[in-house]
Length: 461
Image (cartoon, rainbow, N blue to C red; front, side, top):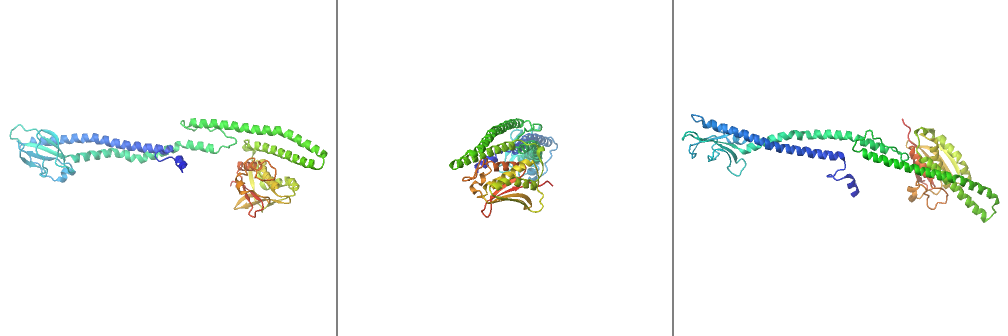
């Protein structure tokens, strides 16, 4: 569970570059919207404040300079709070008596100092007021004028303007995210192309990845991967050369030893010496078989060109395999047969030699494990609409515990009395997977032997 969490990354530390870019873009846009709204609130608040102050001064001066004196028109509280209407007060020259006002409900005394100020009429909302007190007139009996405006109206107007300034950025955020998503998806196509190139690599002949369409940011990673592929190719080539050279070097002396053993057979006395001689001959034969298998394995691991593929009729190939292995079947007194269910179009486009390797190894394995007097059946049939080749024997089968390892190189089922190199099934599976075939092994349902089923690839339509 912990490994899965680490692999996926936590929500605040995403592993995906696309997700990281989107999160950063959202954060930057929201931050920009907040900063724009705050800056607009401050800037437009000052602008609104100064503009309304100028209007208050003009209103006060218009009343103070009128002769005869104008009286303000009455208004209600809705106009004062919702529309920010100016409240005009006319005071006596000494400032002691309120002679007229546009909203009698508001009780704010005449300020001692002329000019602008701020007053509060209580702790409730809407109790803050901006006040402008006009200068005293040139005549001693000239009335004083004072103009007020609600401060909450001013703040609401500045806030509304600030929100309108930040609204375009907020509205552009989804569009910017969509554009970024498209841009990142287009840029990541090169990454997906590199991933496809890596996935399509043949493990036996890896090739370097092209840097033509790779972004500069990941070019060093691809270059390092190419260097790794070069070392892997070198290691594979060294391994193949070693196996081939060793097998070739052993082939001639082992053939000479086999020939000398064959020449000595007539000179071996009967009895215990003959029994030991037979054991020696069986060991040499097994060593020769192992050398041939190693050579086959090294050739199979070598990269193959596409020109080696050909159209192979599986039925014809199976008949040839059964015919050539008939000698081994007769030597072990095993009844081997081939059957084909009707007219089945079984064609595979692959090198015929490698397909022969698949079926020869499976049939040879069945013949070796079938008891003397046993039966090996090779059948070409259709199962669930797919063409398969079944190789059945009546040998001991494979213990379930060893079923997962039988395709490993040099692995032999514990307790097996049959001599072998442990490479036959490994060679068969490698050749099969290389050309789209799949081998399935299972013990027969009646408990009498093993069934090796080869699933053939579907023909292209």
